[in-house]
Image (cartoon, rainbow, N blue to C red; front, top):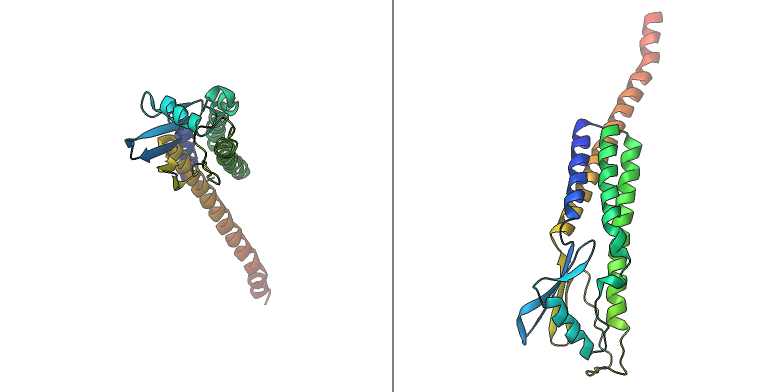
Length: 214
C-alpha cells in the first residue's frame, strides 16, 4: 500500500470510531399541529427523540393509527452494532499498519457489506412499524395508507411530511467508506503501473540481446 493509502485508511478507521458516539440517522415529522416538528434520531446503541419529549409524542401519535410503540429494547441489533463498528475501526487500523493490499480489499468489502446490512435492517424496521398495524384497535383508520417513512428523502404521510437523512455519525461513516475506497483505488493503480513497467521492461530484453549478438 502507498503511504497515502495507509493514511486514508487510518483516517477512515478513526471516523468510524467517532461515529459510534454520534447519531447515525434522523427522521423528522412536520405537520400543521407540529410546526416545530418532531424528531427521532437513531444511534448505534439506541433510538431517542431529538428533543426531550419527541419520542414519547411520536409513540402517542402512532398509538392512534395502531402502530406499536418504538422501543429500542426490542431491537437486538442495537446491542451489538457499536461492537461491529468498533471492530471495523480496529481492523482498519490493523490494515493500515500491515500495509497489505489484499487485506485492504477484504476490509473494504466487509465495510461495504456491513453498511448495506445496516441500511437493510433500518428499512426492515420501518417497514414492520409502518405496515404491521393493529387496525382492529386503531382510533384512526385510513384504508390503503402506508405509514412507513422513507429511508432517504421525504414522503407525505397523511398530513405529516416525513423526512429521513443521515445524521452526523452517518455522514462520517459515508466519508470513511469513500476514503477507504479511494485508498483501495490508489493501491490498485500503483500495482497496475508497476505491472506495466515490469512487463514493458521484460519485453525489451530480447531486442537488446539480439542487437548485442549481431
